[in-house]
Length: 382
Image 1 (cartoon, rainbow, N blue to C red):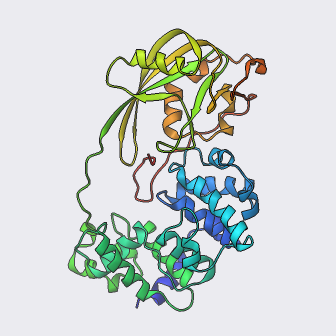
Image 2 (image 1 turned 90 degrees about the vertical axis):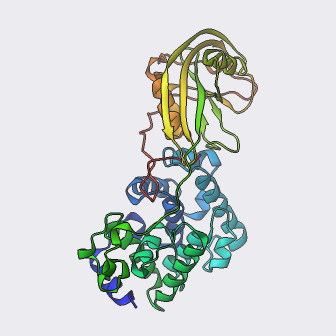
Image 3 (image 1 turned 120 degrees about the horizontal axis):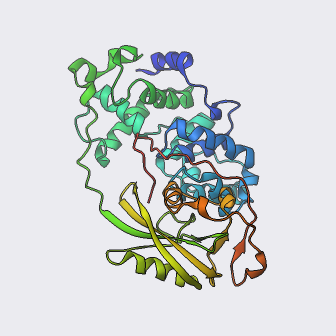
């Protein structure tokens, strides 16, 4: 059993993280949603801002998807933001505003699967549960000398069973966090076995295999996708569209479309579909972005127009208003390529707003943050 040695090490070495200070089930809920596919260093500033805006379940449940997505901008995997808000609504509606304690009840909430349910149940409520994330899988693959690919379902089930068998009856939540902490700081992809509190129990270390485990199945190459992104401006404002279900759903972006032909014509069409008159189309360059399952290259065209958009789901914004919207890292790249700073700063009159168009006053610019998955790859969920 490794629990005693691991917990002693955790008590000495655990990091001072925002969600570990004055912990609560709500803080655990928010942090675990944010930590899905994203490393701690990226999450911390987002978590702090999020809790300042939504200090409890009730405040989050009362928010809109746009409110939540705006604070999620740049964190990636935006379905997490929408599901977190919907989970808060369900907690208020079905559980009297109290985060449920059992794995079963937690799994019934939107966006919560086996890992997140186990993590919340153990950390927030001391349930004897085991959360198998990438860090925990790496730790237990090495401890047991597991040679099978850790991303195979049968292997993950076996690793979960091994981890669950090690969870102590007391301090289950600390044990789960200690395993994650070990994987994040010591038992990393380049293991520091000399610092490991459970090295004496590690089969991989004894066999000299620690640096080569865990094994994973060969990853299929990402398909390459070519897009046209239209930076549509009337000289004072910029046109954004809200993405429907699918690609970066719920975020605001430049109008775009897949393209294998005349990009300039596609950019013109994207602008005209918004009900504006095109005066000039200029190719500004290309942006490449690695999503989890796509390798995307976007040709960005600046389209100078007159008129107003004639459909819902579109917004004219002033350059400083981006911090009030959910905007992905990919979109920020296309905005930069389209030279947002060349949109003039004169005030835009709201008088022309009609038929679903929203005019927004200028606000401070939003700072871009890179998205990094929990496994160390810099990407965004597509």
